[in-house]
Image 1 (cartoon, rainbow, N blue to C red):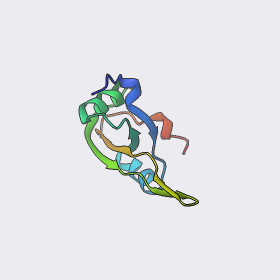
Image 2: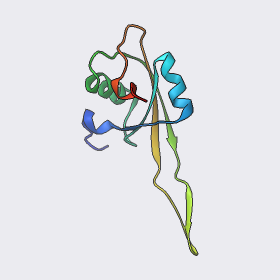
Image 3: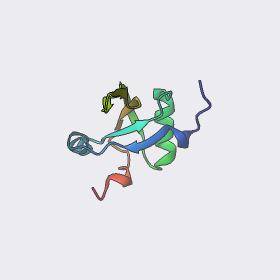
Image 4: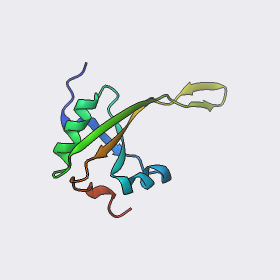
Length: 99
């Protein structure tokens, strides 16, 4: 496994209608490094966003989509998604505030 630092674990937030509706329940969705584990994701969230306390982390592997370019066919890169639940006493994540 690669040596992944906490600031390399979280790649970007997932901004979709269903992920934004989960914010009311302190549920946030992120794209994460493909080799990141649940404890690594929990540690990265708590270090990157001060005042947050993670209650639960669920992860899912998203396979690449088939794309064509003329006669050539290939796949896009596979990704990993993490759904993070925060505790009731936890502070909200600020990057989602203006959305």
